[in-house]
Amino acid sequence: MIITADEYRAMGFTAEDDDALARCIERAGFVLDALTDCKASAAAEKGGRCAELVKRAAAFQTASILRAEIAQGSSGSREERVSLGDYSYTSISGSDTVSAEAVDTDLTVVRLLRAAGCLFGGLEARE
Image 1 (tube, rainbow, N blue to C red):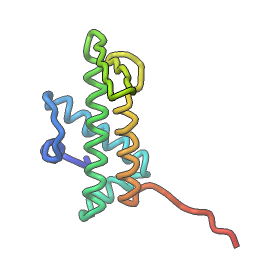
Image 2 (image 1 turned 90 degrees about the vertical axis):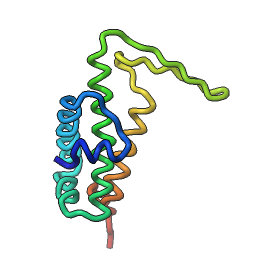
Image 3 (image 1 turned 30 degrees about the vertical axis):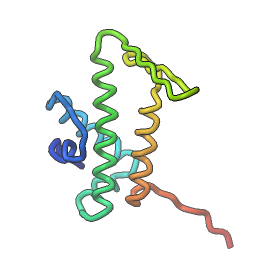
Image 4 (image 1 turned 90 degrees about the horizontal axis):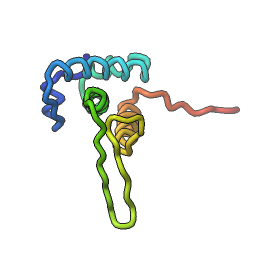
């Protein structure tokens, strides 16, 4: 396990159901290890700046999984409309639509893992 429930909450994330949180933390660890070929868990165990970045990535991934689990558990769909000047969008929870928040979370996780050195970012060298 990359993070604990206490670390998750200490980073400012919230969860009402402790059992669901524990399941989502474990699943987030599986996702990060699959993405990084187990480098995320190794970096988290070493400590230091890389460990902090990996733990933040785990927290964001946990929040994403928890949000999806809650949305699946809700019986009806809920519509939320957001308008910013001329730009507006509608988010419907409980359906198969992908929200902008989910995409942003995925990119945040990838960026944190890349900054921690857990993702391969090699360049081709030619002679």
